Image (cartoon, rainbow, N blue to C red; front, side):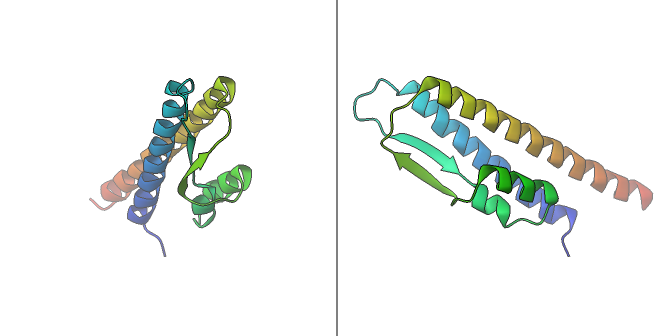
Amino acid sequence: MFTSLDHMGRVGLMMDLITQRQVALGSNLANMDTPGYVRRDVDFAEYLGSMNSPLETKLSERLGASAVISQRTYEEIRPDKELMELQNNALLYTMATRRMSNIITEMKTVINVGK
């Protein structure tokens, strides 16, 4: 059985992963004209697939299976693709912060009911 604290830890970890991906994508844009620069990305869909929440499972199905690793690829950095990925990442972060807010609200409700 999972408690709100378990979910809070999972959402916190997800927010950390999203932040790492934002840094990688921003670095790609900043270095797109740097000779020899290798594109980086952080893909965490497989991690999300191992979680129990229907929302998290739905996200993993949409993102596809992959590992939680920093990937380096020798493909050309396209600004339009990187900007689209930044927007995708921003949406994931918004969803994660809303989930964290809901968890905190649930905990406050439990505390207030117990008074």
